[in-house]
Each structure stands twice: as structure tokens, then as C-alpha cells.
Image (cartoon, rainbow over the protein chains, first blue to last red):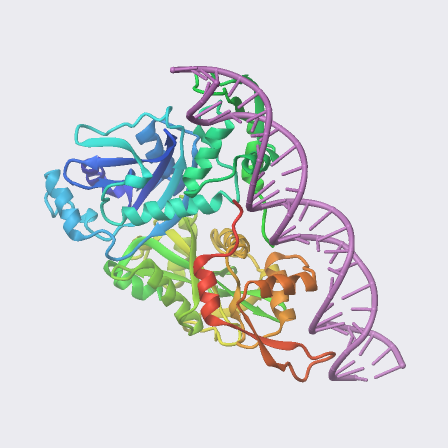
Length: 251
Length: 251
DNA sequence: ACAAAAGTGTTTTTCTTACACCCATGC
DNA sequence: GCATGGGTGTAAGAAAAACACTTTTGT
């Protein structure tokens, strides 16, 4: 909470923040966890400050844990944003005003903040949005219909998605975004949603299985319209290995 | 200069710095511009602080300009480093001591600094290393034989090179690293040096020309041992277009 | 029985890799 | 004239893309 941070500002890295783009997948939609604070009509990415005795990567883990209750999640730094005008003094003053903090006391907060962007891939069903107090609404929002965001958060979100799309070429995705057991069509829809285009079913199957990270279960999805699709799970060892070593390269 | 910064610390973003990995290419070596300060036996990446009224990207441009006299250069942010122990208080104190700055006065400088890493690709022959004062030695050093670096600068350098290697798959490289007119073998050696492995001449030619960024000049390299190779230049429009739109993708 | 989604294989094309010979120049 | 690097083409293999029919299930 901002008030707490300001009261202990010597414990926080000055003028530095963390913003997290938390992706989830549900209803064939790529969703982003967004926060609406009552002092703003706009939404925001979940973010926080960096304790002076904490690595920035760990601070990002804390933000993620605080907002979703999840730990040990895929979380990756993708860019740092430090335009002079990225947080306007006007915005800062509105925030301070909302919390009833005198401008003088909130001076720490009104400078330009440089923010380090992280993106996370989480299991939508396991992540329970956790508002801090009554002033917050935390919601999963389809990335296609994100409302207006504060400051440069839209830019941060766009960059995160761009990075995720690029990293699809370097690593597999799905663990953390899908439930433990899933079907190939579900995985394909995840890829299609991230990439924003349709893929061929047969070619997708061949390519995704060739990576060698899938275990075909002796089980079919039940209670489903039409032909029951097979269930798969990730072979976690191989999955991690591939994430570590990377996928194909060009040159 | 640190003393100047400390005397005007309210003009600088607190606890934030910029470090630049400046790559050049010469003698078939990928070189990195490094600085040795007389107060240290180790070398350092050229870096600097961020004026509060300057975008971090612009601050990086300033660092590059200050060290090489070059502007309008390929410069890209690649990662931000913020481990708690990345700059030890021991190191900070030694620096302050060297400049004869009382510890008290230099308190601003002894906190953990978060540093934003940028890498640049510059034309070795056009970049004139510019030491700041007599306490500095600025030198191009073959990336294979970089000496011990201060703090986590080795890690920063490694990450820069890793990023550069990866980005070879996404964009062409050469403009800025090579003189205006160059030969295919030179360009190939650049690629080989960055990637750290040999490439097949014939396949390289096919692949690099297929990108459509090269203009074959009606001119051969003169005064050269053995058969004179053809000179090429980059078609700047197409080059920039490809850098913007990216190269091939996987999915 | 039919609509809707799932499963599966083959062919074509494209890209990648491997490989060998002749050419021009400086010494 | 010979050693050294530059220039060029082709054939084989691998990967990607295009494509259609059969199967299962709920209604």
C-alpha cells in the first residue's frame, strides 16, 4: 500500500517500480490481470516497489504472489521503461490526493519512476485475484478488449505481448497457462490466441509433438460435445530442459 | 565525472545507472569498448547516470556519444540488472576514496544501483575512444580476452552478447559494424565472429542476399592479396525496413 | 442421421545442408 | 607457377505447408 511505502521510503529503492503483465488463458481468450483503483477511471498493471534489500527479480515474484497467490511461476523480465514523461506529476498528485497524503509527504512518489516490466504466465484457474483492500478491483480481462490504462501501461502490455510472441519461437509455452491435463486443440488455441492467427491442426500436432515435451495420457476428455479429444500432460523434465536450452535457431 | 554528479545529485535519477556494451569489429575480432579507471585494477563497461529530465534511452545515447563521439547509432536496451549485491559497498567506498570524496558526501552513491544495460553496434574505425580525464584508459578489447571486470559487468557483457546472437535471427547486422563498402567475406566473418562458429561460404551468400538488403557495387576491393573480392553496400531503405519488420519467424 | 469437432497421412514445396571446381591476385 | 582466398551451382535431405477423409460424440 502506498501509504506504508511512503512511511518507510528509506526501505525502498527510490524512483523504481516493478510492473507485471500477468497472462492467463481461459475460454479461448488470452487474459491479462488488471487492477482498477477507485481513484482512477483507468486500469493499471499490477505493480509494486522494490525493497532495498531485495533483488528486482525477487520483487517481481512478490508482486506476482501478492496479486495471484501463486509462486514458482514463469516470470521473465522483458523491458525497462524510463521516459521522462511516463508518469505525469498530475497523475501522482491525484493518487496522493486520493489517499489523503500531503503533497509534501508524498514528494518521494512524484518523481519520474523508472519501471521494470516482467511478464508472467499463470494458470487462470489457480490464480485467485487478490485485491488489496476495498479500493481495488482485480480482474482478468481479455487482451483484445483492454480498457484505457494509466500512464504508459498500455505500451508496457503491448511490449510484453510482443515479447511473448517472439519467445514462442525460442521456447514452448503452455505449462502454467493450461491446467495439468489438456487437449491438443486447447494447446493449439493457446498458440493461436497468442499469435493472433489460425494454425493448421495437422501441422501443429506434428510440430508440437516433435519437441518431445508432451505425454499422451490414456484418458479422454469427458462430457464434451462431439468427439472426445485425448488428454495430454507436459513431461516436466523435458519441458524445463527445452525452456532452458531453447528451441530452434536460424543461423 | 562522479564528483560532478554527487555535487548535483538532485539532478540525477537516484540509484539508477546505464551501462553500455559497445561492440565494434576489426581485424576479424568482435571488440568491446572497455574502460580502466586508475582506482581499480579491473576494467569496466562505459556507463553513466541518468539525468532526471532525460529518458533512459537518451541517457544511453549520451553515454555512447561521450565515449565514442558517435551519434545515430544502433543502440538497444537488452536487460536491467538489479541484484542486491551487484555493487558492493566495499567497491563504492574504494571509488569514493580514490576521488577523495568523504563517505558521508558520497552516501548517494553507496546504495544498490539498478543498472539498465544497452548494447551498441558501431563502426570501429569511426569510433574514437574518448577517456574522461587522465584517470581513464579507454580501449577496444577482443571479446575473447576480456580481462576481469568490476561488479557484475562480466555478466552484463555476456548477456549482451547472448542477446546479440539471438537477435541475429531477427534482424540483419552489419550496418554500423562495417565500413560503408565491404565484401561478402567480411560480412561473413562478422557473423562467424558473433556466432562463434564457421559458416559455409556458398550458403551464407545465398542466405544473406536473399534478405534483399545488399547492393552489389561495380567495384572490387583493391590492393588485396589473392583474388579481389567484390564490394557491396547496404541498401539502407531495405535494411531499415527489415530491421523494423523483422526476419523470419518459426510458427 | 447429422452437425461439429477430433484424429490421422501424403504430397508438394521450400529451405538447409553438404559438397567441388575454376578464377584472380600477390608473391 | 603456386598458394591463397574468392566466386559460383547442384544434388540430397529435412522441414514446412497444403490438403481430405474418416471417426466419434451429443443432439
